[in-house]
Length: 257
Image (tube, rainbow, N blue to C red; front, side, top):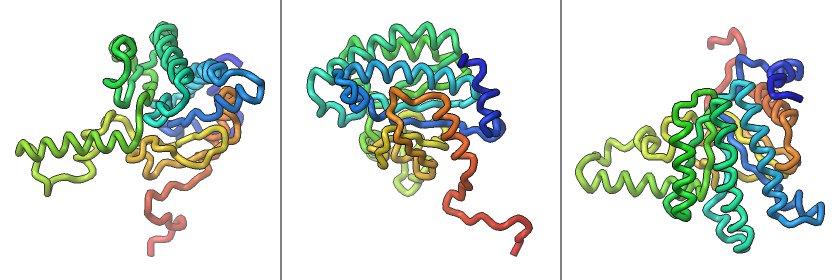
């Protein structure tokens, strides 16, 4: 199906386009299992997962999603075999180069979060160039978490806050949730409304810990390379059936007592 048809297809499947999640986050799991089931190297699975990324970005842009966050490489992923880590870094570098024209044509703004300064200098330069080139695009924000961990993000924020207190620029008694948010990697992005995890694992794996406090979770057994726009639409339909209370109570219609 062509990208331009996804809005009509979403409506046909029951999506209310006036109540879309503003921000969808995804944990892209199952690349290795997908490859193993076919007798292939895990890196082949990661390469096929890259094709799914492009589908999701363009499809979400067409639907009208404002932000798409993807867990691309975690701080824990460095523990994987060296050849896999090196292959993932090469894939990230190649994708950043090759996909840039596609993102530019489709109005995609790219942002990277994580300890980017720990990556190889050449890769850092490529990622920063992608951010700079797409900074004025407004159709959708593609937020890629690279060398990212939710705990690491909070540690980094706390360090900056501590330095501000030490320097006398911040009163400890004035620190609140807004203060902490201001020092996160992407403080201007709305919290995710919906977090989708593929391949059936039922945990958030250190992804956007602060931001997902009230995010709706959707777990699917589908492996990431097999995840399609039809699956995304199913997740959005499920999301729209839920009642989000944010810790409060939903009163029955007409009940003012």
